[in-house]
Image (cartoon, rainbow, N blue to C red; front, side, top):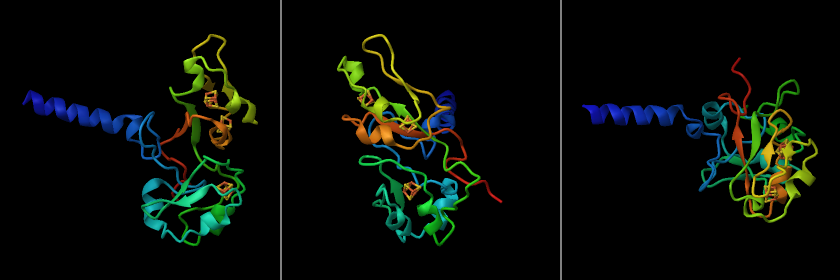
Length: 182
Ligand code: SF4
Ligand code: SF4
Ligand code: SF4
């Protein structure tokens, strides 16, 4: 009986933890893909998107690809998002809904333990690339940079230049990167 209760508690803790958030990328291992900006909340996005790829074709930055599940995901490995909105405007199903009044998404960068500074290798590439001054570098050797969440837009510019892929992205809201339901 006590074992069953323990297991139930562990399951509940997992479900309540941010790592169970479908838009959050884990600190290591496989990273959960991000849907494009102005996407509806995960459940409705998956219900509405038909995988047509129009958003990917519309993206002048070339950062949207269709993943193995047939859904569009953002890939910051080569480029950043300009938040131009072309992807959302091109969506014929409403899975993406452009709204200039609405924040494109609630996604912020975060620095992983694999950052070179943790190994005392000098690097400031991400900070040099961030137009928003959102990356703070520690004075002490061996410590990792931090992200000022209020300044980070989740544009991905930092990730596109990190030589060791040490920057991931996580949703800061349970509404994910999503318009509110009407
Ligand atoms: S907002 Fe613009 S740059 Fe960003 S993913 Fe959409 S089309 Fe690409
Ligand atoms: S995602 Fe964009 S705004 Fe945020 S830290 Fe990286 S470069 Fe700066
Ligand atoms: S670019 Fe990557 S390795 Fe360099 S400081 Fe930033 S997170 Fe660390």
